[in-house]
Amino acid sequence: MKTIRWGIIGCGKVTEKKSGPGFQKAEHSELVAVMRRDPELARDYAERHGVPKWYISAEELIQDEEVDAVYIATPPSSHKEYTLLAARAGKPVYVEKPMALNTEECQEMIEVCQANDVPLFVAFYRRAMPALLQVKELLDNNAIGNVRFVRTVHHKKASIQEKTGDLPWRVKPEISGGGHFFDLASHTLDFLDYLFGPIEQAKGFAHNQGNLYEAEDMVSGTYVFQSGVHGTGQWCFQSYKNEDVNEIVGEEGSIIYSTLQERPIILSNEQGEREIEVVYPKHVQQPLIQAIVNDLNGIGQSPSTGDTALRTSKIMDELVATYYQRKKA
Image (tube, rainbow, N blue to C red; front, top):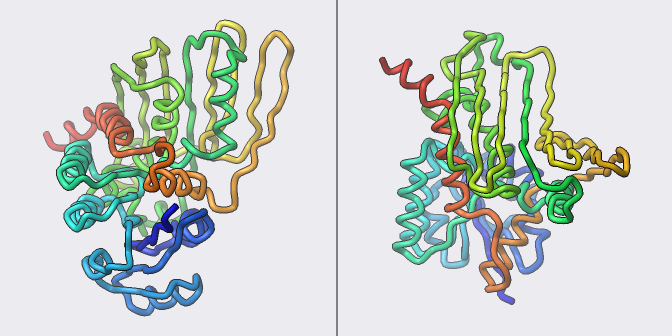
């Protein structure tokens, strides 16, 4: 197997622990270059993580002959730009989630990658995390019989930043695509796609209830998967506590799990109720990085691609569409 030499565009917070070290620790993988516009921050990251090269230009990193594949870890507003640059240089792309600002940008990214025969992967890494794959294993083993519906309740307290007007980029639609819904609910909706297949119908309602920023902070949705499973979700980002719970209900039991919180999976069926331990890897993206490296070496397929991420983008856009239509009116 060939060692895949990676370059990172945007070595910010997400790359410190979640992803960056995973490129160094995955088998047949090596992190050889990083890029950040601030030269001091770029050099500091490279020195702390033992990366031999650093750049302040994304194009220079992409053109480096020793970089085989590119990981884009910038905010979504620049995902399309850097993906197209890498694709046209013939470099495989691994891009952070959400994949882009909207479905149209995602579609263009896929088309350009296909035109240049370049694979496109997206960091919906929960598709490869052993902790959450236990949920899929329970379903595959018919632990709760045929699934009838799934419901999600996710609420989160407003941050001090948001309350004082020092807004993070994640609630600025021109940078993130929307509010926290796009950043956090995308993981839940994408993993449900992995469990039950594509959503074929969706209807949503979105509002701004807290008036702390322009993006939506409350989203409710109903959807139906092609498999026949029904789903409901409520996401509130102006609540009194942080909670993230999904319940899958079948004809013979239920499974309760969290998409984002490291908490036990609860299985209830005719054998009773039991808790299944959940342990996150130290670097949560490492299992998916390994799957991508294997894929690039012709072994297996990554569970998260541009095509699967496009489906998630479409559903998110549909669930908040009425809110942004009202904003434009």
